[in-house]
Image 1: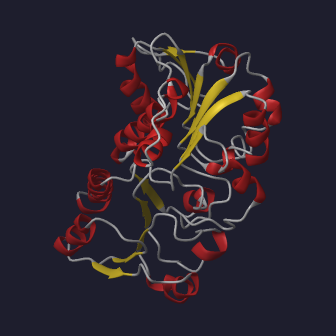
Image 2: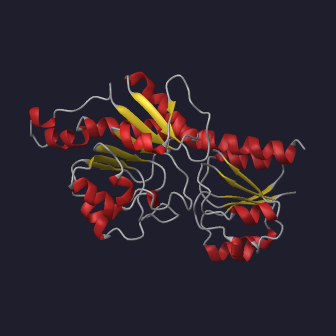
Image 3: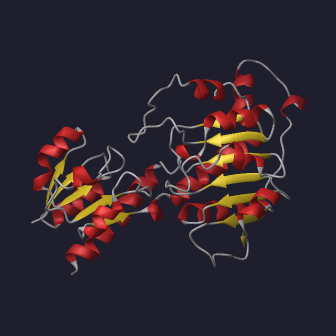
Length: 313
């Protein structure tokens, strides 16, 4: 019998499936890291989002561990090298929330370029401004996508009906060009983009990627969308680019002051305080991909992968 700790709040499909398989699962969403350390030795499996880091020192305590399941996409809080060396299977399910994330990114973008986030408040306060809130259209513009995995591809699919030119760059893969997406170099992203959307993992290459030096390479002013990881964008440099109109606006679902557990480590951060003052910035609390449907889909995909590995074999 497998003993599994559910370390976050997941769709009941996960616990229901474990129950059908006669696995011993525990609702551990209230566990602290110390609770985990005290019980790690008894675990065969872990299901986690981003409650805390599973680094080598923590994983060594789980000497029976056979798998870690992460409903969602990001694995930066899990020591993958340790898992590989110790034959610990790591499952994730980016297929389950890529549609929700793509819709959220598109919603933020449409709200920004049509001033919907601003005019809703104005009209509710009896302010009726039309010319001052004239928007811009997507048709005929160039969308540069950096990172073309599940998320980048899903976003591109949502855009293809808008009459845009969609170009994409991915450092880690090639040969992904489609009828509506042109595969390009990063230099072509710098040269052509009117909008830039990040869909990259968090790693050594992408931490602090969008900094002053990076932004200076763009030939045109553009609008930035980030639904990937907050640590990829340096807020100080973003603020400076917004001030100078190098960046014409930003849609940010993630911030570099976010902790692993989806909370802000310092809400009074001076760069965040400055960012909040821009009317051409839309913020959301890391909820791109966070729908009722995606919660179930992510669970279903994770369960299918665990089933094929441990039940069918």
